[in-house]
Image (cartoon, rainbow, N blue to C red; front, top):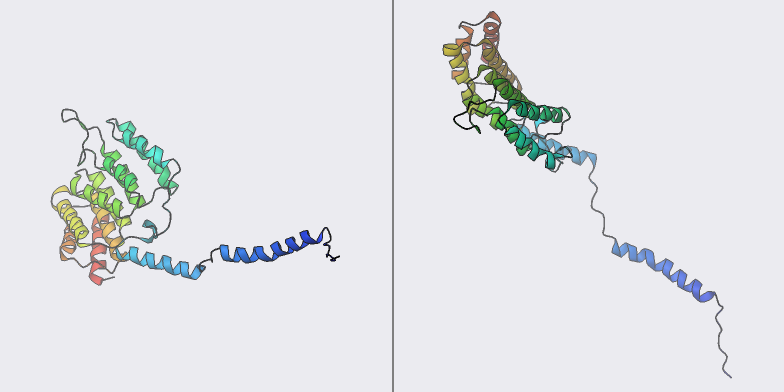
Amino acid sequence: MTNRLLTPPGLRAAVLGLLLYLCVPGWNAFSTPPAGPAVTPTERSADLNQAEEQASSEGYRSGDWVPIGEALPRWPEREHELPILAARARRPHPADKRAVLTRFTQLVDNHSVSPFDRQSISLIGEIALEGVRVSRMPHDLPDSTSPMIRREAVELLGRIGGPHADEVVRQVMRADEDLVVLAEAVYAIGHIRSEADSELLLLLSELLERNARVVRNDNLAYATLLTVERLHRSSWGIDDPRLFRAIFEIRNGAFIPPVRRKADQVAQLIRQGY
């Protein structure tokens, strides 16, 4: 008779359990993809500094841009609320436009509108240019957009900043004839830009020349001088002969003493090259 080796009842289960225990970690090692290299805080800081240098080279302040790869700040209801705000902004009643600006003011105060949010900035720009470049009213009806509403819209654009707001504010500087709106636009462009390009220098020169020879508005002259001073200090300096002559026209023009003193200070600043 052949003798058979009898396996104890619990031995087979123990062997199977041991095999599973030994095999599963090896399987996990092959099935789990290797983790990528960790980004250190130093490397991330270097990336942000590089993005900041790129934005600075375009003339915008560091607070007016969003680094590449960063999520744009938005309010949660943006996708649903923005069409409603757009429809209300295009109504003829000033109260509707003011309500839209009030809502955007809240969003800007909460840092919920990005300088690269083209839709929101374009909507505010429509209000800023209503009756100047963008007119949705029938030609047989008066335009109901008041200069104070346009001024408030321009102020918001200056607070948001960025290239899209820059473009809209320049359109206001070219097209609007109201002195209050123009003064706000000139002041806003000084907060949006960190340095002036040739087009902006031309706009500022034309405003100063027209103000010195025709308009003679103290508020607009002072706001323009403040912007020229800010741009000069925040950049490599402004060296533009036409702008320098326009500042001297303000200095020698029929303006109140504070405006003439500011014109003299800005002229001396530009002459010194600081």
